[in-house]
Length: 214
Image 1 (cartoon, rainbow, N blue to C red):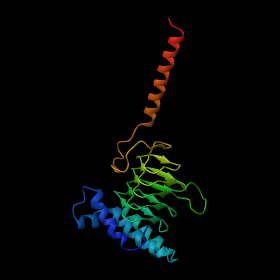
Image 2: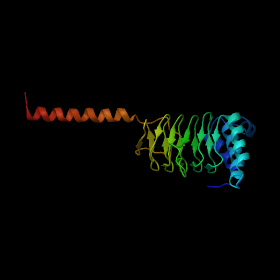
Image 3: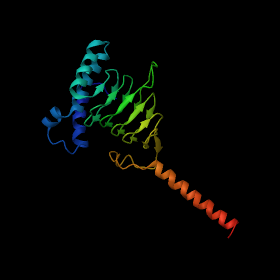
Image 4: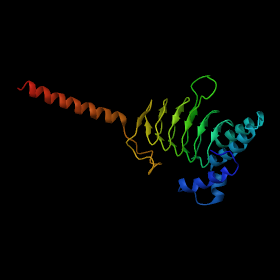
């Protein structure tokens, strides 16, 4: 991942690639709070990396006030990160977000207590995190993985897998590379479990009928 200021160019460019509503540069620069929050983060992180404490936190505070997005200056965001809409997004101090990740509104990348050290999630490259998802603790979300909307993720998610539910379950029979943004078409894990249970019951009933014919 890159900390250079020119990462901002990729932050702007990725919006045109990922959002069909983006039509011109003025609209993107002035009307996309996710871009504004990341721009403030780039500056605050640059100062934070040089040992300045108060000013980066103040910049992050004002950015949260104007955009509704809270990114700690100590977090590490790769290039081309896209925060879509973004209201209510919280990214903790030791969180790491890989290149070209997409984060929708209401997402939390948080810790699980008052532990020190690395205590926030690590997102790989190309990860898509759906609306309202909560990812907690020092866990790893693999490259190209997807997190379903409203999911609560408390354990690692392998690369190219999708995590859904509360708490989340990993489903790896999905194509997250060809259709990374299709996070709204997720399997119903509870329904799948019930279907498997019904099939098992039917199989047992057939065995009983075979053993004890009427």
